[in-house]
Image (cartoon, rainbow, N blue to C red; front, side):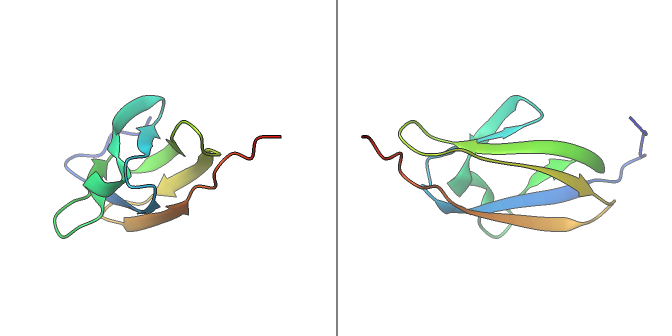
Length: 85
């Protein structure tokens, strides 16, 4: 990993369900609704990160992002319920 002095990037999440778990680089960081308001963003180091949003009973969302220093990125999810059958 490249080391940046005090440079960070900000990730926000929105959508539903609001209580879905947000995991960054295999570490739980909180729920979707914790990162969706004024002053509510997750500060990350610039570079590549693996993001997943999941909740029991729903299909998971996964993506990989590459953040630049001082970038603000918002991920909007709408997890679909698992269909039993």
